[in-house]
Every structure is written in C-alpha cells, then in structure tokens.
Image (cartoon, rainbow, N blue to C red; front, side, top):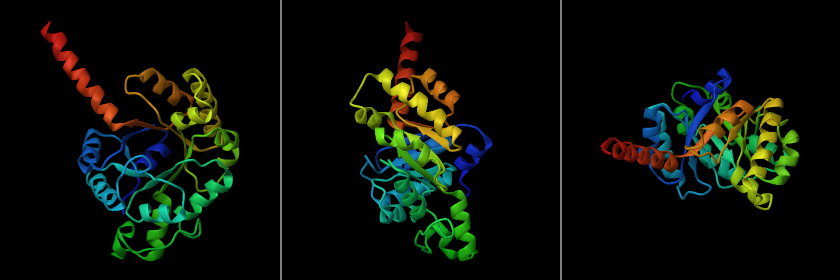
Length: 256
C-alpha cells in the first residue's frame, strides 16, 4: 500500500497535474511519472483497457511514484469494486447528476464505517502481509480519491447538493460533454459555465478537477487554477504532440 501523493499535494494547497491515457501503455504511465507529473487518468470510459491491463499500468505507476487514477465506464458498485481492487488510488466517475448518485459512488468506494465496499485481500491490501484488516481498510479509505464528474446541465444545477456528500473528494468538471448537454453552444458559453461552477465547488469545500485542457492554452489553464481548480488533466497524446511539434519547429527555425 502506498500513500496517495496526489491527495497529499492537494492537501498542501498546490495544483496537481495529470495525463489522460486512452490506451494500454504501462510505459506511458512510467514516462509521466519520470517527468514528474502527479497522476495519470487511465481512461476506461473512452479507452478499451481491461482490468488486467489497468493493473499492469498501476504497477508502472507504483514504481515511478505517480498516482494511478481510473476513469471508469459507469457508476455501478461492481465496476467501482473491480477497479479499486486492482490498486488504483482514485476513481473518476462519469455522468453523476444527483446527490443520491454521488452518495452511491462513495458508499461503493469506501470501506466501513465510511461505506460498504466489499472487502478483498488482494493487492489493494498488500495481500494482507504485515497489516491487519482494520489497518489496511483505514489506510485505503484515507488514501482514495473519489471523483464524480460534473458534465451535464443537471449536474450543474445540483452541484451544491452533490458537493455536500461526505466522502466525495473532488468534483471534476468536463467541458466536452457539458457543452453537448448545453446544446453545443459557442465555446465562450461553456467557459462561462465552468467559470461559475469551479469557484462554487471550491466554496463548498471540495477540490475541483478540470478537463478539456489544451497544452497550448496556458492562459486558460492558469485562469482555471486562479478560479480554484486543483486537478488539471491533459491528454497524454496532446502533450506528446505539443512537445514533438515544438522540437521540430525549434530545429527548423534554428536552421533558417
């Protein structure tokens, strides 16, 4: 069992940066750990990784000191259990629109007395070696990050109630599906909605994650952090594309 370094960083008041990985690639996890990123979002909502593959990506994260977080495909209790038992230290749960849905997520993700997650003795508990059941369940509860996604108009309307749920650590605002839920308005309207909801969540005492960020739009990311965002996610492919293009252009400019 390992301390959740991203949760510790959030407690310190510093923003945490994470790369979204959409395909099976333990090496990419390790790379971002070596670079010094705080967490990886292993995307199993849009990506096709199996739980066995997720477990291997978690192993890479553990070796390189980066927090493994999975975006899971749904908020069924059985899905939450299967991913957490593979050792991920956080779950990002899509399309949470009501307080009752958020309560169901945190109950499924946390052990007694904070929830009703089924107890297994596998890798999430160091296979029960040199620890007791009560010690390991408390450690897991203390180190997990439970992260419902706010990505629909209904969720925006209910965000105050959702933020009251004990055991929810972060609310992750996703502009892509939020914009679709709003009827695909101009980008400025989606940004305006995010600019209102981010400080509202922080004011309710929860950390805020924000997605849909571009590596080239540093100003926007900085604005979101200044509004209260704590967890910044950017697609790994976008980050690598940005770095590759920057290198090529720098060399070409140097030669001219």
